[in-house]
Length: 258
Image 1 (cartoon, rainbow, N blue to C red):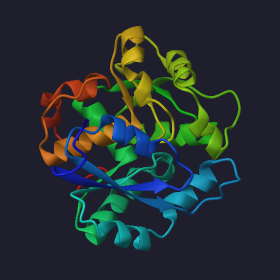
Image 2: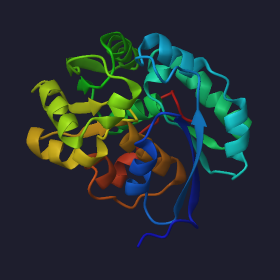
Image 3: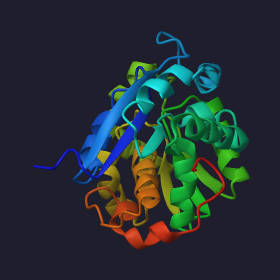
Image 4: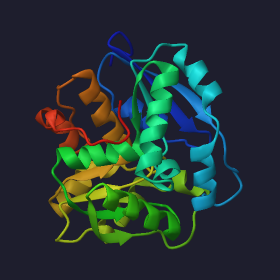
């Protein structure tokens, strides 16, 4: 049984309808990590999570959830929504990380910034991209990554817009199939973007199928957390990224990290 405390405390800021981020961190975190959560609003649970809804989440007031979560004195505070800052752009993502760090006193990781950090560590400049987002958010995500020097050479989308519940309800097999549809020979890595998509459960399986690294939002956030804490023990079962701690010494890109 894993020890659930004693090494580091992680503070997760999680969209209130997200049902998969906390289980993923409980699954992946090594011994001694405790996970503490505050829920975020700023969007309509009944609406399709389109670019307007996610921009609203990104721009929502975080002062109270940060204050409450800072009460446990986490070493690292994690902003656990990728699309909320992908829809605003890299400058917004970096400024949000700075605000969270200043208010909490903790090192800070954002989901979007963590994707960039992970791809930098893998030296992946060309990617295949898949998500449960609407097309307009995928466009903005690809633009965000392009501004950070990452080219998207193929992408895959869900067949019809998903609700907040629908995104979280995608099965690991659904995610696996979506990732396969996105992959192309010209990509250095496959990115699965969304903190509420059950990606971590299929990373190893996808890597075996496509023969290249797979990076997803929740795995990338943990990778960056471990780098900030200087933790270099490999973690098996969740892809190349977490199996090779030497990559953690890669130069950090100037986004989403304090």
